[in-house]
Length: 209
Image 1 (cartoon, rainbow, N blue to C red):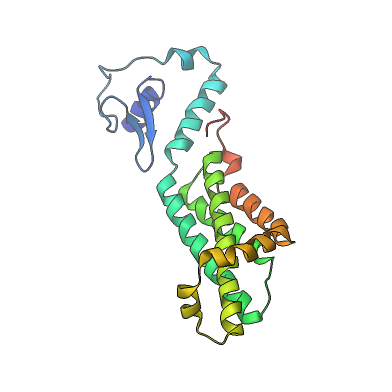
Image 2: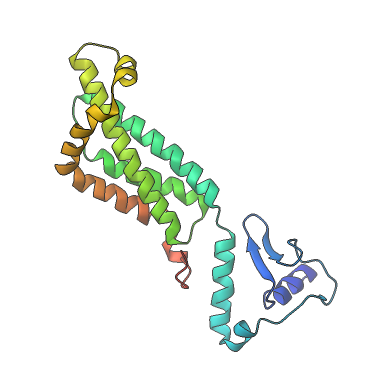
């Protein structure tokens, strides 16, 4: 076992251990990577961890490591990009084909969920954010497609209609769509946005949000 492995093994049982995304195991006292020769002057045994069975203690440390590898900002950025791309694709495909394709919502949920996974999330918090972004993408896609249909009907440019249309005027149509079969597809998108946004197989068992 190398010296760095010895240090890491030593620090895993200390109350000052912490796991930071992109850095790994760090010391809460110094906010830096462990750096000592044989013993650390700040070492303090984690009594709660020591009182656990070896397997249970190892699980606690593993959960902390998984959370330390998470990158929530990255997940949100990727999710927002997927949200916008999905909404734009929904609008373009709907206007091009002349049909409101409810199945697009399922694709959007998948797209947003998989994009959120870039943040290596292991907690339901990532799923909640993914679900909201998936729903938002569906609503925006529906809105953009309605604008496109109206623009075609009145033979005006899409961008002119998008800029001049009052959002309040479109809301009744969006609500009507939501109350129709579309709501089922929205539900699927929200479910996929939640389910796919974090690695459930690696989810911590401590119930952390």
